[in-house]
View 1: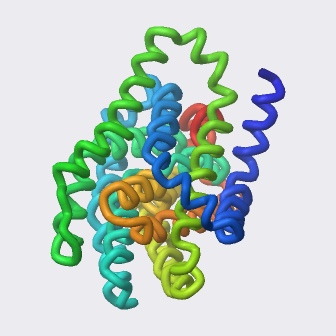
View 2 (view 1 turned 60 degrees about the vertical axis):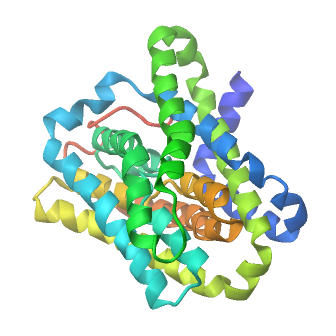
View 3 (view 1 turned 45 degrees about the vertical axis):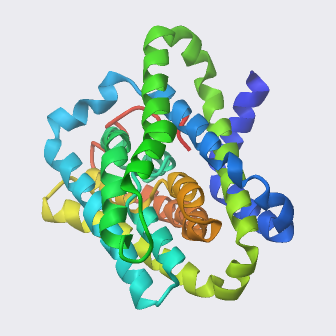
Length: 324
């Protein structure tokens, strides 16, 4: 167990580089990587179950104690971000499948790495955990409607099928994880240090498979898609921080809002795109998974050198167990 915990700590620390390595490997052996695409949804379900194991009722406390802060993050997450994804795709004249992919990334809940990044950035960890958890629970209902609204005129979108998929690979595993922790708390506590390894490995396989399945498209139109993904992420980071500033939230809460809005659950986006459209639609999600971990790490490094007030590290528990 000690070896696994050490490996998990290493994976959490170097998550961005590991994801980048997975993407490069997918380009090198695309045929082998593409064979793994049918397993993407199952992998995401495992990751979401692991996330559920890390959650406790106390993690939802900010929803009641600081509803304004949670609400502004959710509004930005499920309104501005999907619209921004659609607008960027239209502006850059991306093909229909990539338009859907950009909308899916924008309409996804908070990313599973965001809590760790907020902790490293000396942000409000409790608020970050609450925003990730609530946005994940709302995703089965919000994401299909947003995709139907923004991308329905581009490609046929079955919101009902999307709802069922998100229930299966997100909501059910997360709730099951919460229940298992409540019933078997002692046993779960023992495996918590290993959960980051499971999450990192799962996301690595997802990125590896998606990049491999889209190797030709990435090499031909990659620069344009990368530009769209980078702009989308930077816009989300700036929007989240600005929203917090407008509401006069403490600096630590602004940092949490910034990272929560800017970092999306790209694994969910890739799974939905692959299952309901085509592997090409999952390309923005795969690139987002690589880039938002790089930008998040850079931002955390910058903010970690600047005090954020008394709420920064004391606002919540160390999220280094289970969320990467």
